[in-house]
Image 1 (spheres, rainbow, N blue to C red):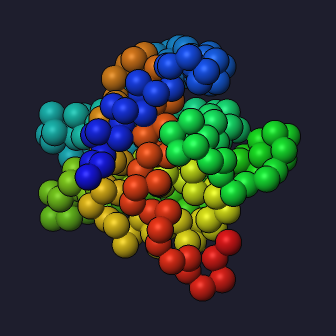
Image 2: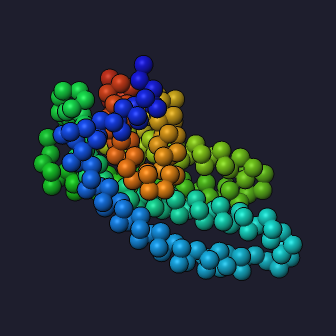
Length: 244
């Protein structure tokens, strides 16, 4: 039985083997540039953002500043994390799709069903990332609002944890599914029907995304792990009606 952690560790070892590691270093370099630019921007503006938010607190709530301040800090960190994650994946998507295809050949001995050329794959990968953003951003905004509703905000950290795992599962498991002509709607159905391996894999990927700098070298392994998860848990599922 291939579990999520095993898939992730096997995938990480696989992408750094001879024949595959040359497909890893370009997305790492791209992500490193984005990481450095965003980190510099955040450090330069974080204090100003926090002061602006605190200035919007009504005077009659000033006595709760000791509680409101850390909530604002946590909220800003979460927003920055999701923004960084979405931007880096948007930029790296064409490379990750190509990497997933190469891993599938090595790991399974057969190519994915996708017969698009490199240029078409890159363009379509960007389009697929936009579809993901349209799906993710409204739900992220709703969850952010829920985080500020008294009573509901008690369970908000758990909701964010589950949402983060779901988003990471969608992000990475979609690469091999897109390469095998699985529509976005059918991909979500397959992930929902196998919710335990889906959320555990997404949870492990979420965890490594929080490791500064090291995550840049671990995330290509998450792409390879997603290929292994696709092969073991999702490939054999019956396509949804009308699915690609």
